[in-house]
Image 1 (cartoon, rainbow, N blue to C red):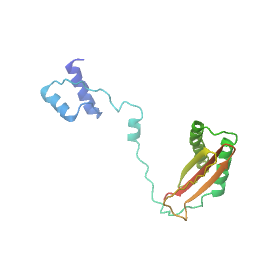
Image 2: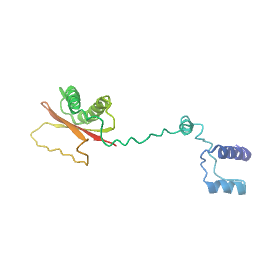
Image 3: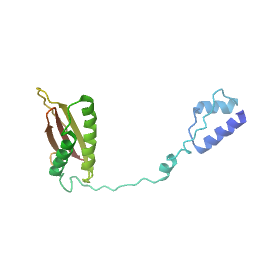
Image 4: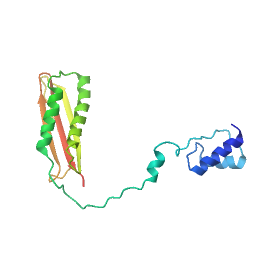
Length: 177
């Protein structure tokens, strides 16, 4: 590519507002001295799909609701049923294997979270934590702490046990104003 072609490409990219691989001091040096050893990047972010579409849309502005508490309480009973159904269906006939149980914790937590979100409870952040361990002659205590409003925030818990493993499923529902 000749120097004149490179200069035209650089001017075009500068007009279109794309990001060049050259810094501003290198562009000025090229303008003054007429040549540069480094090549000029001709990648334009304007040509990539999705970047220019998002910029042109005006942002939606929401008005304040001044709602400090939930309109209805979190359905603890329904969530307890979801926990029992999902954990029991996934782990009823399973034997403890470390790698399998690690994947199962991720899968079960995603399924529980999706089923709770299907209830469409507004303004609650849902946190799902699953513990699965080998059932052997051991003792374990699991605790959790967080800062929350006792009038609107709540949790649900379900413990499951079969011949070779135990599981504890916790769901925390925190109201966000």
